[in-house]
Image (cartoon, rainbow, N blue to C red; front, side, top):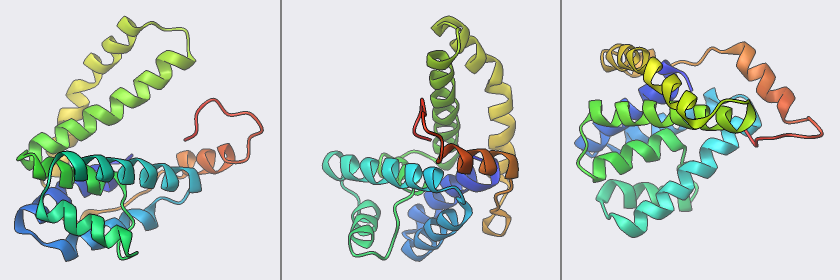
Length: 176
């Protein structure tokens, strides 16, 4: 997850949802797909996005969520997690800055949770990591809030290469 990729997609999609601009949402979904070079990363985003879309379709109805779900079903959309997350937040009445903060916190929380299971640190230490990183998350949210669609990008070659290598390991502790 990069600030100019997934986080920016959340911001752009929640704004597009507020305008009921499905074409912008579909365009960002395709952009995100193109930027996820590693198969596991791409498939993980699709799996979590589609599952969230399914759950939200049952719990909270909105025109944008329903329209996006129909587009996914007929193959006109892919259903990446940051896009669905933004549409879900919009359907719940969250503002762009709230959705962005929630997305960033959720991403960091997931990484720390995996770290707690993988390395010998306890939950308290994991929570300290999250607490220590909050100022960085605020900085990222501030930067992303001033960006537009022309700024969307992804450049993390080291992470991408490792993710691609991970796909071929015999034993893996985590899927993505």
